[in-house]
Image (tube, rainbow, N blue to C red; front, side, top):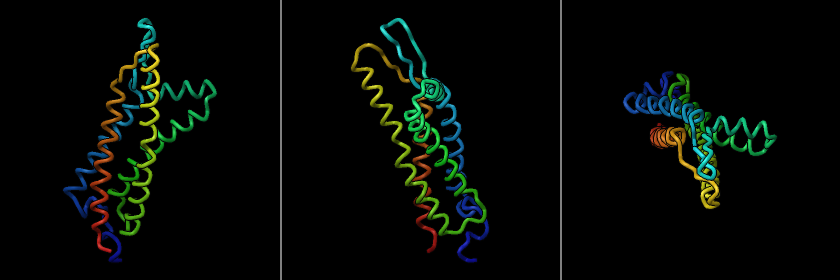
Length: 171
């Protein structure tokens, strides 16, 4: 039973860092959800028509248009992976009966997931570059983008900090 974290959550074993990381992750989850529903970009076509697009609205448009491959790719990498990553990190800190080896495996899973969850940022950058270079439309970044960005940065910081703590657990 020495292998277990004294049957307490990791946050209780490392309270100062733990509660700070949990607060970062809860804030990150809030920013993430807001970033999905608030306007991500504002597209102005020919200086006359403006269309604000959120991640949620973009996914609905792709679904209704029958673009299921693009819908699936953006849903998985923009919604599912970040959501699972944030909640897995929260579980890592708050789950009371987590053994040290389980904590290491869970963190390894989260760190691998994080590498794939940035694909959506790459896709969005290519989309913005393509539209801007065409000269037909003007894209301005919306508040949803910034909230999503803050969520990614908070999650990344919490993940790196968690990795240092998990790697220091007695083997």
